[in-house]
Amino acid sequence: MSQARRRISRVSLNSPRSPMLRALGCCLLAVAAMTFIPSAGASAAPAGEFTMFDLGAAKYGGNAMASGPDGNMWFTNNANNSIGRITPSGAVTYFAVPTTSVSPSTSGPGLFALAAGPDGNMWFTALYENFVGKITPGGVITTYPVPTANSMPYGVTAGPDGNIWFTLDNANGIGRITPAGVITEFPIPTPGSPGPTEIVADNNCVMCGFGITAGPLESLWFTIPAANLVGRITMTGQVSTLPVTTAPPVSMPVGTNVTIGAITAGDDGNLWITQDSDGKITRLTTAGVATAFALPSATSQPVAIVPGPDGSLFIAEFAGKALAKLVVPGAKSAPVITQYPIPTADSIPTSVATGADGSVWFTNVVNTVPDSTALQVGRLGTGVGALLTAKVTGTPKAGSALTCTYLSAGSWAPAKVRYQWLRGGTAIAGQTAKKFTPRASDKGAKVSCRVSATYATTLDQLGATSKRVQIKG
Image 1 (tube, rainbow, N blue to C red):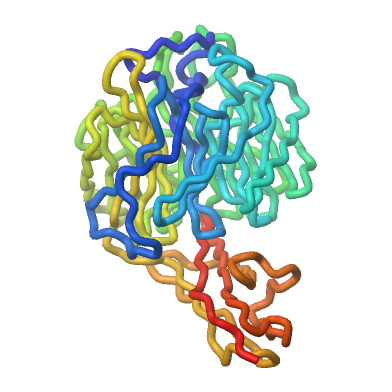
Image 2 (image 1 turned 60 degrees about the vertical axis):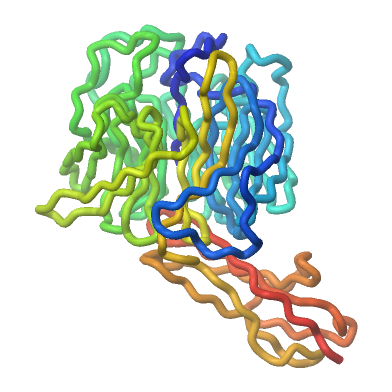
């Protein structure tokens, strides 16, 4: 799903790209030093309570975040060109992404979007180096070049067809990649002459795709910022568009903020879009009825939006230095919006994602003085508690079948569930059924199971691992 790409004040970026298409970050030099590490397996914090994890000082950064089927949160770090994994207890591991960029001025590969794929891996895009990549739960990375040169793949999401879909931010198109790596590109038709009459940047594209999400009608939905449109693409590649409430700008000069950006599907069956330039959130029905709701501050610059664990929506406010919770309204009522100011001074949240622990996680850039910024991962308690838990039932002895059971809480409904049995914390090859029968050779081993659930509508994924049971003879 789409994440933020915006200018950070007091930082000079060398890339010639417009801020609409320029990385928020590319040169963080991060370390996994946490300010506070709760005990492993800790329950979700009370509503409104923050936990912040410091990942190191750097010049600037902008990063994506998504929940993984392994029960961890995954994020991109454009400082060290890597994918990071953070456990619920705060342990961070980095995996380097292959890159041809050799200096900060090249902005690195541009890792600004990340999503869990239907194959159990995490998928990401590299805006500047024109590839799509996947990373396994164990950290093995594979990259796939996009056939169209300089297409700038950006937003990425899982599709209901079992593939991964992404926007081509500089090529008027949408891409589809199979889990095996086969890429197909679909053009976005230009309906008349929408959007600005002039774009003063090196990409003169009006119908560029930006954020993308799985959503209603078995389709992918994406934003077209320069034209102020939301697009829909079916699984056969048919594209249609719907207008959003703000008027398209007359021109798009360098330094102009995006009008619309991030998009997600809500539990109410509608699409929800951030409106960066005027501090609003728009609800868009599949029939094209758009209703805008103002955030408390018109200058908060909402840049990321996701479904919360209780039917609400959570928003990252780039300039507002806060997260916001929007309780989805009825057809004739206004939403209830609650602001949660981030406790770290000079915060710039750039992404947001709901975790299996029921918390809302986010990446946060701290910009205090010229050329002195840091990257944080934060967690906001919602008071809901764990959304997914797993348990092993049965007699733990050789020859006796064990069953992996799960409990899904909150408002999310699992559309698909996968199982993986573990021995000593390591996956047992071929043991992906709900039941597992230990052998005599398993005597003394500690066995557990992992449940990976894919949830309806947005196809977000959560994971949970059971407690270990020791096998007896």
